[in-house]
Amino acid sequence: MDNGPNWTEFYFALQGIGPELLEGVHPGLQSWVDDQSNSDAFYSDSLCYALEEWWGEDRKKAVQETLTIWVENVRRHLREILGPGSIIPWEALGGTQQEKAELKRSIKMICIRIDDQLVNELLAAAANADVE
Image 1 (cartoon, one colour):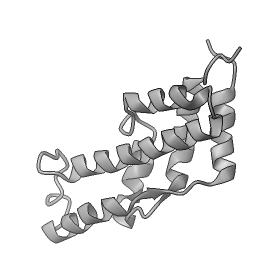
Image 2 (cartoon, rainbow, N blue to C red):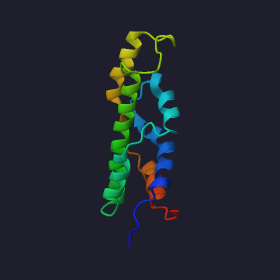
Image 3 (cartoon, one colour):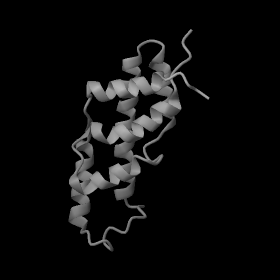
Protein backbone atom coordinates (compact mmCIF):
# COMPACT_ATOMS: atom_id res chain seq x y z
CA MET A 1 0.00 0.00 0.00
CA ASP A 2 1.35 3.40 -1.02
CA ASN A 3 1.07 5.97 1.75
CA GLY A 4 1.61 8.90 -0.54
CA PRO A 5 4.42 11.43 -0.48
CA ASN A 6 5.87 12.99 2.63
CA TRP A 7 4.92 16.59 1.84
CA THR A 8 6.78 18.13 4.78
CA GLU A 9 10.12 16.52 3.93
CA PHE A 10 9.65 17.25 0.24
CA TYR A 11 8.82 20.92 0.84
CA PHE A 12 11.80 21.47 3.16
CA ALA A 13 14.06 19.88 0.55
CA LEU A 14 12.49 21.99 -2.20
CA GLN A 15 13.17 25.17 -0.26
CA GLY A 16 16.88 24.31 -0.21
CA ILE A 17 17.28 22.72 -3.63
CA GLY A 18 14.82 24.79 -5.66
CA PRO A 19 17.01 27.83 -6.28
CA GLU A 20 19.77 25.55 -7.63
CA LEU A 21 17.35 24.29 -10.29
CA LEU A 22 16.45 27.74 -11.59
CA GLU A 23 18.03 29.13 -14.73
CA GLY A 24 17.71 32.59 -16.20
CA VAL A 25 17.38 34.44 -12.89
CA HIS A 26 18.60 38.01 -13.36
CA PRO A 27 21.58 38.74 -11.05
CA GLY A 28 19.54 41.58 -9.56
CA LEU A 29 16.89 39.07 -8.43
CA GLN A 30 19.10 36.13 -7.40
CA SER A 31 19.56 37.14 -3.76
CA TRP A 32 15.81 37.79 -3.49
CA VAL A 33 15.05 34.30 -4.83
CA ASP A 34 17.59 32.74 -2.47
CA ASP A 35 16.17 34.57 0.55
CA GLN A 36 12.51 33.96 -0.31
CA SER A 37 13.00 30.25 -1.02
CA ASN A 38 13.21 29.69 2.75
CA SER A 39 9.77 31.19 3.24
CA ASP A 40 6.36 30.31 1.84
CA ALA A 41 6.64 32.99 -0.85
CA PHE A 42 6.75 30.37 -3.61
CA TYR A 43 4.10 28.09 -2.09
CA SER A 44 0.67 27.36 -3.53
CA ASP A 45 -1.91 24.68 -2.82
CA SER A 46 -1.36 23.33 -6.31
CA LEU A 47 2.20 22.31 -5.35
CA CYS A 48 0.98 19.80 -2.80
CA TYR A 49 -1.88 18.73 -5.05
CA ALA A 50 0.43 17.99 -8.01
CA LEU A 51 2.80 15.92 -5.90
CA GLU A 52 -0.04 13.89 -4.43
CA GLU A 53 -1.94 13.61 -7.72
CA TRP A 54 0.96 12.03 -9.64
CA TRP A 55 2.62 10.15 -6.77
CA GLY A 56 0.78 6.84 -7.17
CA GLU A 57 1.25 6.80 -10.94
CA ASP A 58 4.83 8.01 -11.47
CA ARG A 59 6.88 9.43 -8.63
CA LYS A 60 9.52 11.08 -10.80
CA LYS A 61 6.81 12.74 -12.87
CA ALA A 62 5.17 13.86 -9.60
CA VAL A 63 8.36 15.70 -8.64
CA GLN A 64 8.79 17.16 -12.13
CA GLU A 65 5.18 18.39 -12.31
CA THR A 66 5.54 19.94 -8.86
CA LEU A 67 8.73 21.71 -9.98
CA THR A 68 6.89 23.09 -13.03
CA ILE A 69 4.31 24.67 -10.73
CA TRP A 70 7.00 25.88 -8.32
CA VAL A 71 8.87 27.81 -11.02
CA GLU A 72 5.61 29.49 -12.04
CA ASN A 73 5.09 30.42 -8.39
CA VAL A 74 8.57 31.97 -8.38
CA ARG A 75 7.71 34.01 -11.48
CA ARG A 76 4.36 35.08 -9.98
CA HIS A 77 5.96 36.22 -6.75
CA LEU A 78 8.65 38.20 -8.55
CA ARG A 79 6.02 39.88 -10.75
CA GLU A 80 4.15 40.84 -7.57
CA ILE A 81 7.17 42.42 -5.91
CA LEU A 82 7.98 44.35 -9.07
CA GLY A 83 4.37 45.27 -9.83
CA PRO A 84 2.54 48.52 -9.22
CA GLY A 85 1.32 47.48 -5.78
CA SER A 86 4.76 46.49 -4.55
CA ILE A 87 5.72 47.42 -1.02
CA ILE A 88 9.41 47.33 -2.05
CA PRO A 89 10.58 50.96 -2.45
CA TRP A 90 12.76 50.40 -5.53
CA GLU A 91 13.44 54.05 -6.17
CA ALA A 92 14.28 54.67 -2.49
CA LEU A 93 16.77 51.78 -2.72
CA GLY A 94 18.53 53.54 -5.59
CA GLY A 95 16.90 51.68 -8.46
CA THR A 96 15.59 53.40 -11.53
CA GLN A 97 12.37 52.72 -13.41
CA GLN A 98 14.49 51.44 -16.31
CA GLU A 99 16.25 48.92 -14.04
CA LYS A 100 12.92 47.84 -12.59
CA ALA A 101 11.53 47.35 -16.12
CA GLU A 102 14.56 45.24 -17.03
CA LEU A 103 14.03 43.04 -13.97
CA LYS A 104 10.33 42.64 -14.84
CA ARG A 105 11.18 41.61 -18.42
CA SER A 106 13.73 39.10 -17.16
CA ILE A 107 11.14 37.15 -15.13
CA LYS A 108 9.74 35.39 -18.19
CA MET A 109 13.23 33.97 -18.85
CA ILE A 110 13.28 32.03 -15.57
CA CYS A 111 12.93 28.31 -16.12
CA ILE A 112 13.60 25.07 -14.29
CA ARG A 113 16.60 22.91 -15.10
CA ILE A 114 15.72 19.30 -14.48
CA ASP A 115 18.89 17.97 -12.86
CA ASP A 116 18.55 14.24 -12.25
CA GLN A 117 20.65 14.23 -9.08
CA LEU A 118 18.67 17.07 -7.48
CA VAL A 119 15.36 15.60 -8.64
CA ASN A 120 16.42 12.32 -7.03
CA GLU A 121 17.12 14.19 -3.76
CA LEU A 122 13.61 15.64 -3.87
CA LEU A 123 12.21 12.23 -4.72
CA ALA A 124 14.01 10.68 -1.75
CA ALA A 125 12.67 13.40 0.55
CA ALA A 126 9.12 12.82 -0.68
CA ALA A 127 9.49 9.05 -0.29
CA ASN A 128 10.66 9.39 3.32
CA ALA A 129 8.08 7.38 5.23
CA ASP A 130 8.65 9.04 8.59
CA VAL A 131 5.40 10.98 8.46
CA GLU A 132 4.29 12.25 11.86
